Length: 287
Ligand SMILES: [Zn+2]
Image (spheres, helix red, strand yellow):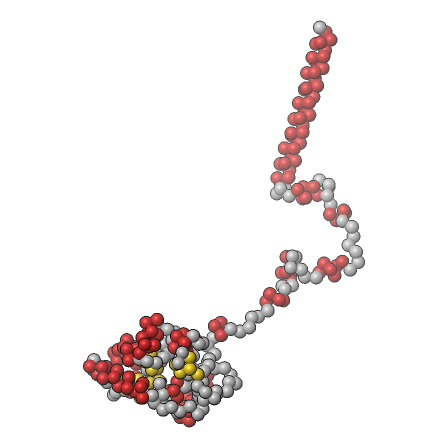
């Protein structure tokens, strides 16, 4: 009996010791977890604090020349990025027309062509597609007939329309452009007057339209605010004319808004351009 009791006591003692050790281990782990937590869950920092890890002591001295290797800018190295931004990433892109302020639209140094440009059977004349110096078709009879028909109907609404400038020869454009450039400077002149060879008036299909006895609105943006100007804007397409240089399309057409400048393209195309509210350049797919 005594031996049995002794054995039991010994067993109880052993289990007590085990329980105590378990408690110590649990407490130690809990303490470690709390400690690491206090260091922002940075195990490395915690180990360094405990003197268990010290990179300065543990890492071997860098070999000679290692500084040069280290200081070379590397994409992975954040600090190197800030101090030495990679040159390749800030390389400026090729200037694109869309991103640039309006530059007049001309291709500098461009020679006038030998032949005029037709796209979809439509004659195009703008700052990218000039006309030959020798191109002299005169005023288009078809366009004149369409204008007279339109003017006759406008008269029914008591608007007395006139085309105060239609066909202009190459030589006349030379005179006109030089006069404007002398007066306002070439840069300003480029915004409202074509250089010789680039005027749509040389096609014989462009009609500058105004009202008889209202010369003050001729070739003026104020024409767009007159009743006649509004009538023209709403009806010209029915006679085959389009407003050639609409508002806010300067980047496409190369010209600021011209409420008076209409271009004859024929009824079907004029209808389509009017309904889609696009420019001739957009219709033809040229820019
Ligand atoms: Zn004009």
